[in-house]
Length: 160
Image (cartoon, rainbow, N blue to C red; front, side, top):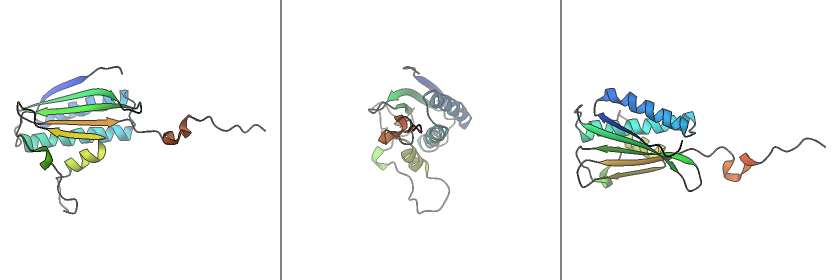
């Protein structure tokens, strides 16, 4: 896929979310993600955007959000996607960002848990010019047997 970066400038209207999902799914497919990993990546970004809309912008639908998708490579050579979600909403101490306790049975509040469970890296920061920046990275999953090298070994011969 080369080094092509995708940048989406959207408003905080939920009608923009399908456009972002489509771009993420397409980039994940081009990067070699499995369908499951592509779905997880898309879900994490969707949750991040929902949190910006709800918490950063208090539901206002006309506020700016920038989503950047950039190809990256892990130390072990796996391809991945770095996602940056940038808003101009209310700043929150990154150390205070957490999901609700999982033993509370009620709808909502699981976005941060989902993001942290799905993504390989997740960092929130408060840029000096205001708003929030969420940086997330997801790498292509190792194929079954790849950790032990089994996937690269030729099949045993049955000729005797």
